[in-house]
Length: 51
Image 1 (cartoon, rainbow, N blue to C red):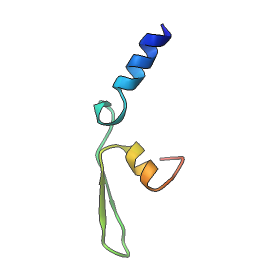
Image 2: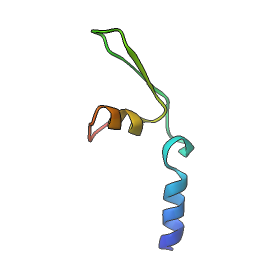
Image 3: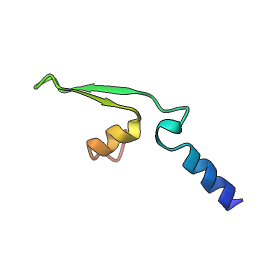
Image 4: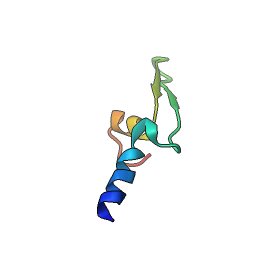
């Protein structure tokens, strides 16, 4: 059962996750735009533990 759970978890990571959303973020000071495929990518980019 643990093997099946791990395979399911791996299959839902990153862009493969049907619940992931595209995220667009804009720096209001520099007018730079950042585009992320998942909230996890945005979280990692800004080194935040919460989304």
